[in-house]
Length: 57
Length: 168
Image (cartoon, rainbow over all chains, first blue to last red; front, side, top):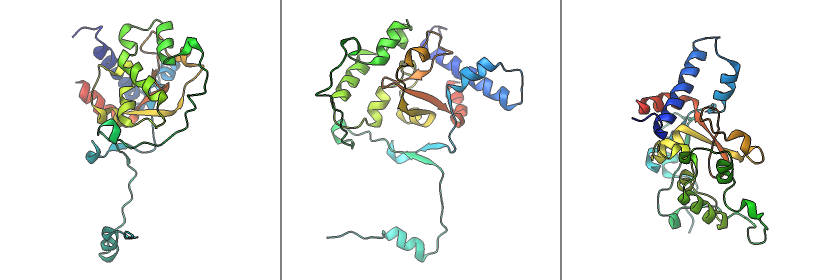
């Protein structure tokens, strides 16, 4: 798959965010503050997990 | 003629002494019927007597994306702008399918699954207004996800495992 492909770029971004979260959860203090700020703009943490109603789709 | 005040199922529930169950799940209903059959709420848009600045006719996000030199694949499609223009003239609230059609262009190639979109992403209720040019940048890593209606999207924290699984 081409690196310039939009889907590839978005998957790379999701992977990057996910890796960052895992590092933070593992207690890695090495994360940069700027990166934390950037990544936090992409994440929404509700108090509960949203599920789709299977009947409605 | 009047319906039952208490449903049959509720009566049985009490009589059979079933345990009460509370859920903390948030169920999202998505009507996938044709547009004319989807329920909506009448809203007061005041579009008829509103004077628009000629420079901003159309979608604000489209202008910002163009002005900030975002890549072509991150520009709104003509169909998205057409849907938005139609909704602007409508007196009905925007339904889930139309909102899905107006998703950020970054997500257009990613998935066509409506259920996954609402399951994985949260759409803020508040519109981003004057500060929009600051948040939409050419760098994909630092640019926010903003849909045609100027609402920010965020990934649900617990949806990440599913997204990564889907990516693989």
